[in-house]
Image (tube, rainbow over all chains, first blue to last red; front, top):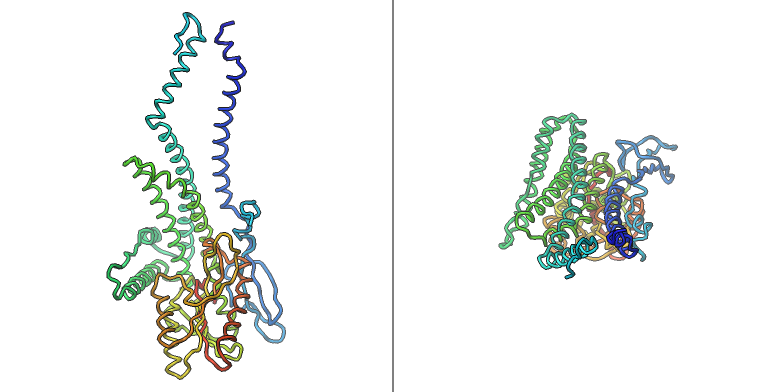
Length: 106
Length: 372
């Protein structure tokens, strides 16, 4: 066989070529992963809840369009009005998400 | 350099590889590696810019849909006007009456936007219009961000100043996060859900209790009276449930003047607001201090400082820590829980600083969206 073919068969040459190819692949994969992570940032599961208060008793339910804190939503037993006391989101805390990904070890 | 052997492929490969090796070093000396690096940076910036552009477009479309859904007219015209709207900062090398000038500029901006929205959405109520104004502002901010990134990219191509690209590439992940926060905020503004910045107004509302009457003391700002810890409490907050920050400084000034004229000079003025946390701090941490807890550019904050010093009223501040994203998106449960702790802190300050029968003013600073 030709000596050029022998050179290509050289194990060291093949290892170097493979390493370079793997490095290029790793760089591009990391970039794609970064873009995928950023796109994933846009899709978060968050739920909005409403706390209705009737005197000292409270009831939690899911948010409906048009709800606001202070809105009278009905009557309670004893003649009082049921009022929305709070509206909040669960599952949106950034620090918690960062911690769960292990980015911060505080 | 090894001369190729006659007819030997190995010799040619060796010669070419040595030539390439030499060329590689020549290119490095000529700065080709930097050009490649800049090329890679630009590729990265363009990829992230595409994400931000998608967010900007999505926000703009949602704004349009919201206005159309609420019987809006000439929506495209309004969006264009809102996108390009700007405020020119007042001259600050001559600071005399700068607050008055800033106040005038902000008032002009407010009335201009109110007028525009009244023309575009004449049949909608004020709450809906204020939310439309906020989403239009978010849309405008995203649009501006896209414009600035494109400007830097094009300027680099013109001037070959690759330092700009390098700095921009380093900033891009942060800019994507900011853009994403704005995009997420849009959904909450469209729904009218209280945001993190509403912590101050929520504290004021809870301190007042559910059965008090709120009266509009100045434009977009309301006040209520209540009894807490055997003191007479006056609560100030922005008018809700629309997206308003009101004029809490101006309202407090008017209120304190009214009270003092009636012989009810307040013994304490407390401001409660959301404050930006450091990354190592927990969302919902409470801190207290002195001064006016308000993040406005000046006109409102200075009113708190002036009125409290004029009437010699101690000015205390209570803040609820949160990130910038948490401040503009739906109120997190942690922030809601923190408002309960803030109420206890305010009550403790009142007990420690005043005596029974005294008059106290508490201003809940922030956006009252979703909070009546």
